[in-house]
Length: 266
Ligand SMILES: O=C(O)CCC(=O)C(=O)O
Ligand SMILES: [Fe+2]
Image (cartoon, rainbow, N blue to C red; front, side, top):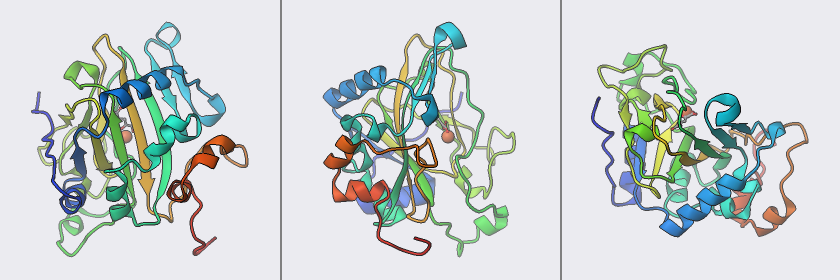
């Protein structure tokens, strides 16, 4: 078993942004306190899945293991609204995606005992390029999409941590059935409850098997450059912002949800 992924807490915004660009991920310890973690977990327990929103709620009884995935969480309960622009995270996101960036999705995800390994994947590779082009120092691929993972458990191998393949965001492509990149193998993120890891969509990664007797709780917030639009299902006039939630949203939160200044194509 390879060592866990090195988790370095960089001291300031500049070095955190550099880490995200260079390493493909950045680690932020102790972002949430125990009270907030407990609140989020209990609210995630009670949220009900809406099949039309592409939510998922597989149960151990009917599907072999718990897999509950709730989309648009910011719109389901005001507790989640501040996670559009949580302090410490939003500064990094605005630095890499621009001050006019979007939150393109927010998901509460419970994975119970029996959840199998995911296959190694990249969430999105905007431009596929040959490796020698990727390693040319003149080439710097912008960060188009990143995800902030709010871990709500102390992670250990049996709980099914996320694994990253270090350096794989420099491959210029998605993995094609491979399990390593230039000898680098998937390494587990063994962080503490309340820690956050932000990663580029090009990083080869996977969620791993939950062989414990415990459910893993994860909040995912997906950010993107302004030109990339929100993915809030259901589509074609059926997604509705909750008026009560919208009434509480700050101008920045409204902008993250799509109330941006007019630009090309608007
Ligand atoms: O479950 C995890 O830790 C990672 C999930 C993931 O990468 C995905 O579903 O795209
Ligand atoms: Fe993924």
